[in-house]
Every structure is written in structure tokens, then in C-alpha cells.
Image 1 (cartoon, one colour):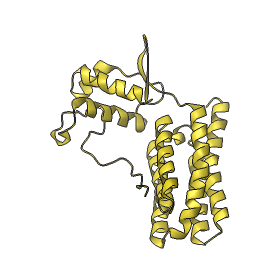
Image 2 (cartoon, rainbow, N blue to C red):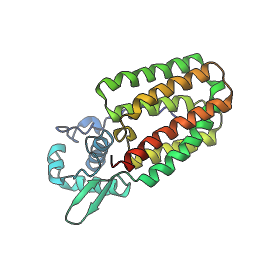
Image 3 (cartoon, helix red, strand yellow):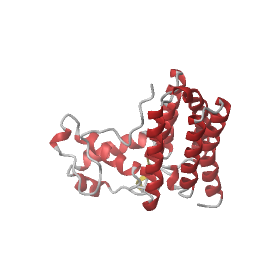
Length: 243
């Protein structure tokens, strides 16, 4: 079954804010390189380091209270995973979004989330739906001081809750892989199309109303698919406008 995509797994690794170190004894068992990797990755995923941001390795080493060696090892690992790009004379920078890969992944997710949500609908209890509504209310409230990364995590948890009840384990596995791929391509699509957030929350309400009222599977599937494609369309329009 799909594990509900919590905001970030609870772990002793550091959150990666300026001033944090990687020498915390609570993180015993992890190497300095591992903890530097987690700290830098967290900053990227939280949006602290946006696309094109240049990493200054010596400065990072001082912030994390380690030598430059584990920082360089962490950077190489993040480069191999696609989070960073390294160019001569410019050093390591946060990778920019790949519009083509983003589009392909969103199309795949639209189809799979639509099917999974429709299949899951009869399995969702009142408790599931109440929890989903509370998540959606948190998303709505978060727009008063909009944080794209936090909104995206809540959004992911919302859809994970619905799709997690899908009785097809193969489909759930495919969704897990595509969600992971999307997280790598770009952690927060709402950072690029913040205006999409309000419409997304309203579409969540509609989707939950369709499920709770027992509407036909085809109608639920179409609503879930169109919801995901709406984010892709907003992103593509933003890119075309130079946003």
C-alpha cells in the first residue's frame, strides 16, 4: 500500500537551515557526508535554494561545521541524482526545471491518479474523507502566507491519502515511482504557478464531494485527471509567457 507521503520523514538528520551543523550526536550512525547531503537536499526541497542557485562549498562547510570534503561528496551525490548541475568556472548550481520531463510525468500522473482515485473511492471511509478535508483546509489556510513547498507537501499528502486506498497494488507502485520522479524534476510546481493553488483547493473540494456522494467511477476519474492536467496547463502557460 502507498505510504502516506508525510511532509518529510522524521529523522535525526538536520533540517539544513543556516546555522545548523552536521555534528549532532542525535544523528549518530550517519557519516558527515550523509548528513551534509541531507542538509543541502532539504534546502533545495524547501525552496531555500531555488533553480540556478550557486552553492559555495567553503561557505557550506562552515555553516555545517564540517570540512569541505564531505560537502564535496554530498554535492557529487546530488549532482548524480539530478538536483545539481556542475559546470566549469561556475561550480555547482541547483538544477532548473526540465519542462519536457515535467510534462511527461504530469501526463502520466493525471492518468494514473485518475484511475487510482476512482478505484479507491468505494474503499474510502468517512474518516478518510474527513482527514482529506482537513488537509485541504490546511492548504486553504496556508495561502494567507503562501509557502509553495509546504503547500506541495500537503497536496501530496492529500492525493496519497486518496490513492492509498486503491485496491490495485501495481497501480499504487507505479504512482509511488512517478511521484518520486516528479519530486526530482521539481520539488514544487506551485512555486512556478502560485496562482494555481486556489483553483487546486477548490477542485479538491469538488473531488471529495463527488466521492462522498457516490458519483460514478467515470466521473470521479475524469475530475481527478482534469485536476492534475490543470496544474500542467498552468505551468505550460507560465513557461510560454516567460514566467
